[in-house]
Each structure stands twice: as C-alpha cells, then as structure tokens.
Image (spheres, helix red, strand yellow):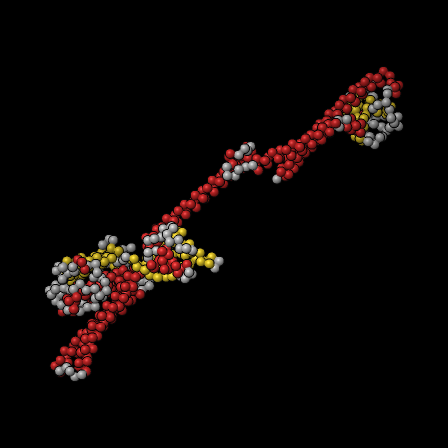
Length: 546
C-alpha cells in the first residue's frame, strides 16, 4: 500500500511539473518572440533613418547581423545583405504589403530564398521604399535554450518531490498501521482518517448491538425454557448436572447445577441416568405425589464414547388419567354388559331345563325381552359415544332449527313421558344453530330422557329454546328428584350414578349425559347445570354465535 501511495503522489507531482514546464516555456517563448520583434523593429527604424541619409552605402557599411533587405515601392529588391539583388519581387509578402499600407508590418513564414522558418519585420522609409529585417527561428530557439538552467531546477524539484512523496506515504500509512480497532478514537490520527475511524466506531457499535441482541435472545431462550412445562437437564460423564431448567427441578427435585443425578433419591432418575451413562436409552413412567411423569434419558456420545446424558421429563398426568378412565370405562362396560347377560342366561337356562312352570314362561320371556332391550340400548349408547370419541374432524355442518328439532324429539318421547305420568312442554322461539343435526338430536333426546326417568309422577319437563343476541340457549328443566351438590361435577362421567339403588329401578345405561357432553363439545357449546335435591334439575346448553 505504501508503494501505491508513493507512486500516486510521485506521478501526480511529475504531472504537475510537466504542466508547469509547458506553461513556463510557452510563456517564455512568447516573451522572447515579442522581444525579438521589438528588437527588429527598433533596428529597422534606425536602419531606415540611415538609409534616408546614406542609401545603399549606409546599408553596406553595417556590420554582419540580421539579414537586411531594401525593397522599392514596386517590390523590387534594391539591396539584400545575404543574397544581393537576385531575390525575386517581394511586394506580395504580407509584411511588405502591411508596411507599404500602414508604415510597418511583421510576419513569420518560411523564407523563399533561405528555405527556413524566419521572423520578418518591415518599415516604410521616408522615400516610400521598405526596409525589412529578418531573423531565422533557429536563432530564436538558440536564445530560448539560454534558459536551460531552469530545466535543471525542475529536475531537482522532481527529485525533491519524489523524496517527499516517499516520506509522506510512509507517514500516511503509519497512523493506519498503528490504528487501534477496538478504540480508534484514542489513537493519534490526522483529520483525513476521521471518516475511517467513524466507520470503525459505527461498526464496533453495530457489533456491540448484535452482541447485546444475542445476549437478549439467549436470555429469552433461557426464560422460555425455564417456563416451559417440559423439563430437561444435561449431565457430564459422571452424572453431574451441567445445565437444567426450573421445570426439571420442579419435577424430579435434585436437578440443580452440580447435583449428581446418579445419586438421586428418586430411584427412577438415578437408575435411568446410570443406564444412559452405560450407553442405554431409558423411557419410563414414574409417579411423584399425584403427578405422573415420563422420564426419557438418552446417552450423549462423542467419538464413540459416552460423554454425558440428556434427561427429558414430560408431565403425562392427563394422559395417564385418560388411560385410567379408559380402563375404568372398560371395567364399567364389562359390568354393565354382564348384568343383563347374566339375567338372560339364567332365565334361558331355567327354561331350557324345563324348570319353569307354564304360567311362568311368559314372565321369564318378558324378563328376557326387557334385559335384551337394556343390553341393546347399552351397546347402542356405547357405539354412539365411541363414534364421538373417534371423530378426527367435525362432520359437515348445516343450519338447524333448534326449536323444530326439539319439537320432533319431544314427540318421539311422548309415549315414554305418558307412561311415567310426566308432562312434556316446549317453550321459546325458533332459533338457528350451525351444527350436525343427528348430534344435536342426541343432546335434546338424552336430556329429555333423563328428565323423564328421574322425575316424579305428575311432574313436568319443560324444554326452552331462546335466541339471544350473543347465543342460542337450550334449557331442559324438570321437577324431579334433583342432584345433590357434591355429585353435580361428576354426573357427566360415563356410568356415574348418584344413587345406585334408585338407578336399578330406572332403565338406563348411565351414558346419556356423557353423550350430551361430547356432542356439545363437538359444537363448541357450553353446559351448565342447576339442581336442588327434591326440587328438580335444569341443564342449559349454550351455542355461541360467531
């Protein structure tokens, strides 16, 4: 870089010197030329005065010097100090014409006689003749060469410029080489480097901002991991915790930096970490208090050697609860199916072995029919509930008039209500909801069926459809036995019975309200229950308008 700066400065100095030289010599040449013309004019004027006194003799007596030509008014050469009178007529030359016309004239042209570039100056004499003096350009150049010492001065200046350019280039580069990039303001610099240092300062500021942003992102990531529900921890090859989030500490306890997980009081954690450090992946469920956790521990390998372990802890309490509910559901289904099947099997066995008197056959047949109907209803409800559970997406919806649907459902239950001596009523107004008609019918039918079964003789079941500005509300209210407060949160569970002794006398599967709950959830509807023992129950399903 120093060399490039030196060459640039030196060539620039050389160019300036060359331009100055051309300018100087041009001015000097013009000056010498003008001085030459002045000398020729003065000499010609003196010679013209001498010609007026002595004529040709005077001219012949002059010492050798500039060429002198005496020309008549007609252009004939009367005298020439170099070529005599053999010179051709001169009247057509510009300096002669100007002299005859205005008294004097000058020109620079190639000499016809001598064949070289010549400067001419002519004056008109008192008798009308013209006296002309001339000097070759070569003589002028010789006079110009007399300023040659100036050339040596320029050469000397050029050498000095080269030396200064070399020193300046080194001095220019030195502050750049000594520039402190981390703190350029404190460096000794000259003003010309200010833009560079400003850009370095701006770049340093940008880098610091980026570092601050990176630290902020790391902080945000740490905050995110600390607040996530899953816990994770990283250990070294001895099982010592290198890093862990708060969720891991909350779930498995001894999980702070520096803790040894191989010596954890939780046997599941210690065994899993030891296994991972031996190169074996572990995935197991562990219970702590009323929570269930899935513990996944993977070995961390580098170049074929285990260098640590990664511990991931996931709260699977809800999943385990669902699994427990599934097992309970299976057990309840088995129990509910077994009861009518046992009755049917017993009655059928007695009839098969002719142990039933003819007058009891009809009674046993009626019992078998009743238990078979109960069994069919139970299977039907289980199928409905299973379909609701297995729906991956909501079936195609349509606009359904909830009031008309309720009216149709009530009519289908009219016979059952009459047998139970319960009055069915429909109130409210027509209101449209967006949903699946068969599932909406399940909601109305099951709520009305429950209200009839758990009502009193002479009681009432009132279905109300109300179209509010923000939602459509379906309310089924009865005057039945009511539900104790402590059971109200569980009545929508599968097979849950408030009073099992009373339930035995009431035909049903125990799945009606579960079907209502699932169908309502499918439509994004909310269920609320208001019940007082001995006074009745009101269930409201709210369909919010979108």
